[in-house]
Length: 537
Image 1 (tube, rainbow, N blue to C red):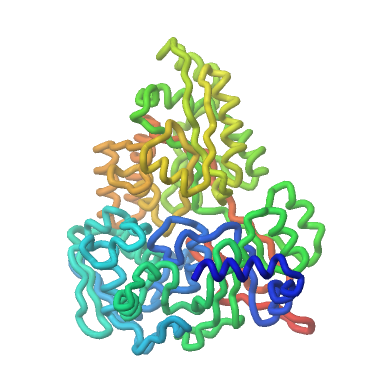
Image 2 (cartoon, rainbow, N blue to C red):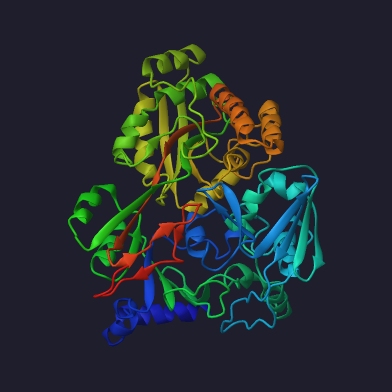
């Protein structure tokens, strides 16, 4: 199937006879929205990856969640669940909206609306290692913390439209996780259908959801096409099609949005921002991301098993220089792992100073040997780190001044992730974008003993106990105080070095109205429209 798609793509790009057929974008702008995307998604199921690109093309598009988070009021709002109740701090019962229809596509025609068994299936696949689809397309699931996966005692169907989650212990991050992309509700009927035709692997590449758009087609490295979900339970979308034109090259994306082949483009080069402002028909919209770029240490790789060596590296990094050369001052300097926009952030009383003289003294005090280390980076741009290779070169130059020689190893993203899982690295430039607005998403994911992204292999009992206390706490004030203690441990033990919090920057045509962001920072297309001549938004 895939080879046929590539054959069509080759014909379109090579033979002049098919050029017009392969460039439909400008002709469909009136009835479709085209977004220039920087990379292919890893999956089209946000539960199977932590990829920001996957979130961008699925969150609020293909899927709905039981509840939604409102950052203005810091409360949860109904979505697929119209109401809910919590008893004994551990039992969460949700009453589902009736007559919510799943997508009708060329590859699947559902026979029934959303039921409680779909919610049960969605989460059982994640938490139950013996579930028949748990190991399909790897057994890795993201978004729900490992603690939460272990903490769900049962998921029971109380009636056709009621489902109850029973936790082993209280967890005040649970609702936030259900509102995240990890809570995207999927179709049990579709999963059973794929199993009967022995095509279960399609579950994460050709998904069926209840969201405002349904998948029409996906040609890797080329285009993703969605069509309007005509039976959507909410207000219908303004576009018949939503198209993601996959364009990895920054300049090509800029060219396409400039000349109208795309209505929205992402991740411009910072030195192009002035040029973009000269085009009156283009606008720039930015949002400080709930993310952190950081330097991770493999603490089992000598001499990085000595925290004073890690501290020497931390104070040798010139963060203001990085903010200037990598982000063009569109990012904030990280003083803690938690971004400043997080409700749990408290500015620390002590920070890593930039002090190369002291760093040099620490290195000489600890070893007389020449230190040579590998620094692993991704070639792929990310919102939290738009140019990891250049950042690595800046750090390399600074560490050379204190007697540490870095050898930079660059990989594509999937290869780097493989290296990280194998612990085949010394240092790595990484980052984290929040799945949901709760500090625990950062701490548990990156530094908890069982955190799936704890590539440093750092494990600290007191740190772990503090995270557990915070999850059980009922007040944000108490949790902030606990997270202050958490940050003190990170400062003292140096398992990583927070560097910057990056912005999400988009370019779009000025006729595009109501473009905004979802709470997790992904584009929100639900109210977007294109204003034609004579119209006013």
